[in-house]
Image 1 (cartoon, one colour):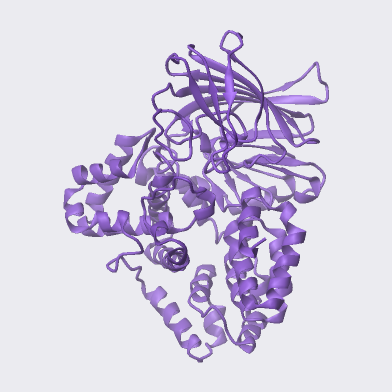
Image 2 (image 1 turned 90 degrees about the vertical axis):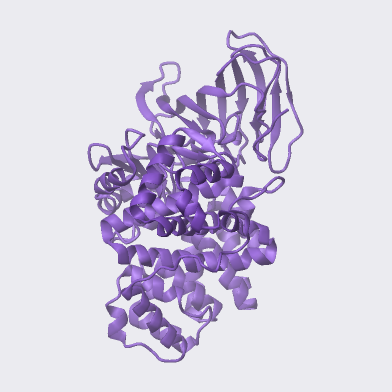
Length: 591
């Protein structure tokens, strides 16, 4: 047996799945999916095919012609799930199964948990290793497959998918049901499989872009993202032709746990981006950048996650620079470095090895060690290489990288070998081993610089030393300036200063969640009384982990008052959190 991914049972000596045909029947009452998965292989198996599953009830396995096959479902591993081993000599396997109501990739929402409040909703989130809870598969980014999917659901709901929509069909045998069919013609790893269903409407933003959302938020979403077509054109100018045909967006219900998920053809986005001023659209640039770095060139396992995210943060900030200039890119990079330093400090106390770029995560749940290290440390490494050789040479290297590894999954060792081949002058000046295999951030890491950034940092430093800024200076801040300013303030402040900030600038009522949470985290940790109610309300309204963790941590660190608010809030809000977010926050609270 040859396993190349520590989080998958897939045997590299066996055939790879090249195409998957899924028939999925959604039952909102039982919160389960009854499914059939036809797995077509790149060659005939020679006695065995090993698949990943998690909490799937297997009801039968046949070959492609319908002949029953012997199979064995092993005991469940707490991280990897249960190995399904099928005895076959054919080139197709058909598995009939049903999902668990607690499937880790699937969140079922009651109508009250949606914007409209009248219809249920369901969505999947398969990264990092959760696709196996939706269907049996080789759940490793090393394996890429195309898909054909049929989704059956109540006739008053709409299904959307990260794939090309084919048709909607009325079901004569079940007049209360319809089904939607989709095709994904480009091969993708299983973690990018994604669908959603609910009361979903759409509006075209351009020839290649459309926004989907619940009707109640569609107008706001269409306005917030109306310039995405221009962003797509800028990205193509940097990285080459867009390889996925369409770049559509789906604004999710509040419980969506991430800022965005780069599912090709249909990016999932948190509604916290709807700031009413387009100040948070940079998240869309990140998900768009994944179209080349991550979706097209993919990490071979979670050990190499930085290849997805470090490259994508670099590409995202190139898009931001092209759209908004070098100062805005510097502001983004400075915020990223501040967040990286906090995560490095946190992880160093837990396990310094988690601050490396390449990791050995055997026996480790990737959700439990998620951090900004692969994102921001990876970004800094690439900036170091760019600064070593100049932008023109680095851009040529980037283009060769995308061309060489398009539609493939690579390891860190693959990257190192390619860098030595295609960018030798950069490798001679940058210590790849220290960056990739060393802990922490190298002392000579690039530093973001701009006059505007320096001015904001200086203002925050003086305020931290006791010199209150002139209100007019802060009134002139744009959203990004506020984010940088708040990130440079102490973790705790005097209550009278927090009162002044809140009453003068209405920070606790900001529509921008970066500003809102940045302020509330300081205020709650400092014991500013109005912050407790505001933090609790925020935690009950959003499910994005970027905001949940710092607010819960701030409340816990405040003391007994904050801990009580945190626990009471979690008890009320946890049913609306995604399973991954619920688990993370339970860990923060020690419950």
